[in-house]
Amino acid sequence: MISPYIDSLLQIFTAHPYIILFAGLLFAGEAFLLPAVYFALAGELRLSYIIAIAFIATAVSDLFWYYIGTNIKEKFAERLVAGRVRRALEKLSSAFSRHGGKVLYLSKFVYGTRTAAQVLAGLQAMPVRRYIAINSLGIMSLLAFIIILAYSVEMTVANVQRIVHDVEVTFFSFVAVVVLGHLVVGAYVKKIWSQ
Image (cartoon, rainbow, N blue to C red; front, top):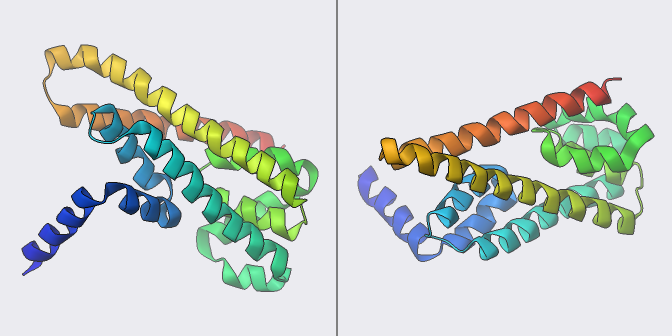
């Protein structure tokens, strides 16, 4: 009973991978980007399409949260965002009031702070042109970081693949390095923000 459902989902994904990627990035973020970049490196998807789709989906999602921040009162914003985003809002508020542009830019690299930074940019009335410029630079920097890291891992793993002919090792190595990179950058940025 479940198997036909899974088969139909796989058929939709293989028929329309870029539409699925856009929707996934819009609602789930980088969780969809990492496998897409991997498949691009494997020759299954076009990297230029992935970059364009990732930029547009992230910008649309971020603009939505910025709009929420500009058009609602702070108390309602606290009710709207809950859990991880609420905790990030509380931690980022003081840092954002002092270094709004830096926090907005660096939030791309710190897991769990992106949405909160967008809402704060709106709540603290960051001018829309400045917001778009800084946010776009942050999106492009994150994409460049992930792609450079992916190519670096691919070249390193290409040497490992001569010894071990397992594609799964390549994918998991790529994800591990990207996650480790995010954690290291995130820890560094959090340390700066807490000063």
